[in-house]
Length: 397
Ligand SMILES: *Cc1c(COP(=O)(O)O)cnc(C)c1O
Image 1 (cartoon, rainbow, N blue to C red):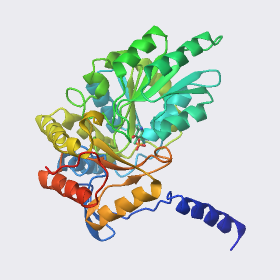
Image 2: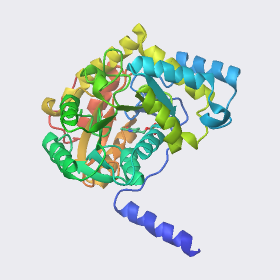
Image 3: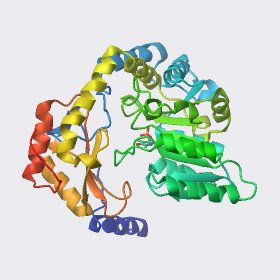
């Protein structure tokens, strides 16, 4: 074997010994509460498809219709000849829904973060990140060349200290604060009202990633900033179209100037083929769907499931109204083993490990959706009780 192969095998072996090795599982079914994985039917508690829209007839119909009208591919980047009417319709729907002047869609949430942060910031700028923000925001901050400061998770005092430090720096532009509305691996919420108050007082800009809030918080699913009444005070709203919206892609919502600027400056937008017609159309259908009574009903189902299951999975005090429920295990290998044993019982809950979370913070990440039924929740609780998982007050429903 040549040295390239040997070197990679050595690195993989190191991952295995640390319990950090990962493998793809081949799924042979649509997204849902029941998924077929490598020939086995599993009860699924792992997806971000919170409203069960990924396989919804209305989204499928929109995608099919778009293929008939516009074909399979967009053919070019948006700025060349790929800016289809469907992309414009999606962006108008997103802006109207979010209550902003404009919106811009990207091929993924990851690309949205990269293009936006690197387009806005450069050397000499300051970016201030919550300790637990998503990898794409960290990568974007690094790639931008800005000085990176990290505040302790949801710690307003630490954030304020950093903003005061930034104000003393000579000749810097406004620092950009970046946080998530609902944190992807812990399910807790950012104190957005207080952060808005701080950023106004210190002349900072604010970007909020609503990946896990879009579609399920707020009056019709506009997000947590909307629910808290601070949406209008946030310069940059980022979100994804691949979680509660059930499709794929990302978006920025904000002022017309911001969107015009990003069309000129966001490299992941400029130098990338436009999302496929089916994707844009299905995402637009999802935005419309959120605003229907059926959308309301699904949100209500989701929150009912959360209310039923969450207090029995984690102590009441540690749970914030969230469809993401982390069962902290700690050790990486132990988390993987627990996940495997749940799998033997026909239940899929992923073991989340470094680098998705800190080392020694491995966990089973349970996500609930609107499509779970009472019996599904009971099966999960029974299986966890069976495994004598050390959650503080496991009870049966
Ligand atoms: C999933 C996620 C993203 C990335 O979105 P994709 O569309 O999957 O690339 C960004 N931010 C957060 C918080 C996420 O959970």
